[in-house]
Length: 115
Length: 116
Image (tube, rainbow over all chains, first blue to last red; front, top):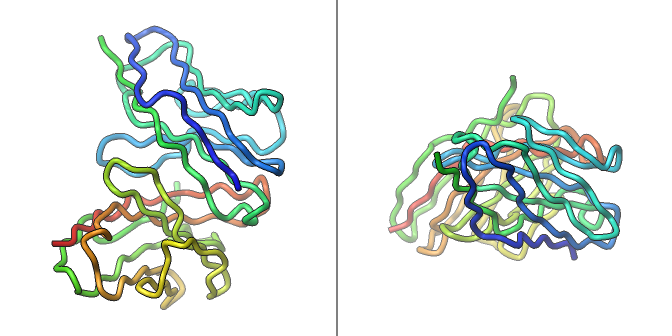
């Protein structure tokens, strides 16, 4: 079965410094991988996705993630944090075991951005 | 930009009562989903729906739950007899297909269900 591990429950950065949110996945197949963001009292917004094209994926708001099969990782990065990036971030996997229908979420990483 | 909508945003009910949560998926999407997020826990898959049938469901989705597409636009989740542990945020999502590459699921803002 698929699974996702988000290694950090909380990450704190200062505004203007780089962001790194770590994610490792497990899948017996060639997976689709996603990062979703959830701002307080809001729904889940897609940041970016990997589906087997380029391994470096660019998303919205300056975020990007790199798929590394050898490390089974899909870490999310941003060169310079902004106050508005403070939110909960979820790494998500799906694969053909469930016909790409069931998304499996990680436990989430709360990003805190200080001025 | 098209988006998934959900009503109500917040539902309070008494234990044992039936609730219906409503969703309007993106209009050209063919697959519909429900997920839930109990406070402080992971987002969990409940069910997927395609061509007027349940396509996949989790072990959470027992006989207390049902889904329906009553017309061409709405997609509903019914909980027959609510329990305290059903209190959660319920998210509806939809996707164009389930083929890798067009399987992105777009989520609604959620309905917070509180069972007293």
